[in-house]
Amino acid sequence: MKKIKIVLLSVLLVSSIGVKSAEVMVEGGIQAPLGLKWGESKDELVKKYSASPADKNNSRLSLYALNNPPIKVPGFESYYGVVDEKYGLVKVIVVESITDDAYGSKGIEDYKKLSAILSKKYGNPSDKFEYSGKELYKESDEFYQCLAYQGCGAYSSYYKPSGGAMISLELKGKSRGQGYLTINYESTLFNKVLTERDSDTKEKAEQGL
View 1 (tube, one colour):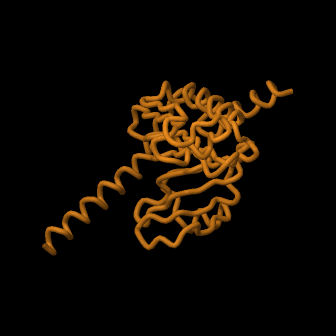
View 2 (tube, rainbow, N blue to C red; view 1 turned 60 degrees about the vertical axis):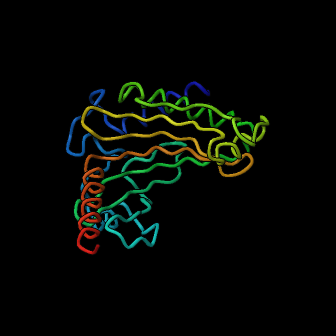
């Protein structure tokens, strides 16, 4: 039964992040996950996916909770979209919460399972960090405290498809036995926003100083 669940999750997740090829080249560098489309506006997300504001950021980038995305992946209960006032949807974040897992066994198992799925889709990670117990929290049942403490531990993989987008998989800690897994999909539009924002900041600094 466990193998059947893993296979089903693999099929659904691969389907949600792109179906036809190992690397789908579209606007944004990669196909958006969950059946979403890069560039969708805030109003479209609210109307089509019951999106709601998830922060009070007054910058050009806003975070929205996607309460009803086209495709939901088993195991993940939270979905977010980062929306730019100029380019629309530019980044997607999916989150799986982990509880009652003091030793990190479930978290590591899910992390490895998702890493295999993403590697099949996008190729091997360009960067990978997998270690724990380096600083302060060194006991085996302090796994998530360690991940939450800078320099103690990390489980993260970064994928850079040739289209210029970025996908990251990260296992993070909150407290004893509590953590979460995230997959971040950053389109090339997101990189464009950051470049434009840095340019605007530099220009304003030059004008004001």
